[in-house]
Length: 106
Image (cartoon, rainbow, N blue to C red; front, side):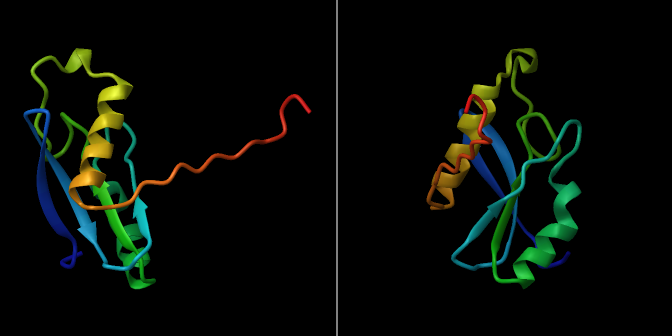
């Protein structure tokens, strides 16, 4: 776990914590559940880094080492999505949209 690096990124006046390991061209982003933190993914992060991936796991606003917003009850999914996109931009990680249909309505 010592290889995991920790960064803090300012997004909308909040300091957000990001754990990162690896340096490969392919990136995996782990998003924790509630009320967990990045730490839930530590073992998977190390394994994927050893397999050649760059891996990041942020703490959502108000969780772990990230700042708590002034009015946490007003935090929406759009805020969290915006935070994640800002983190990817800061770390210069390209974004791709991957969708999968399961054949409903066919």
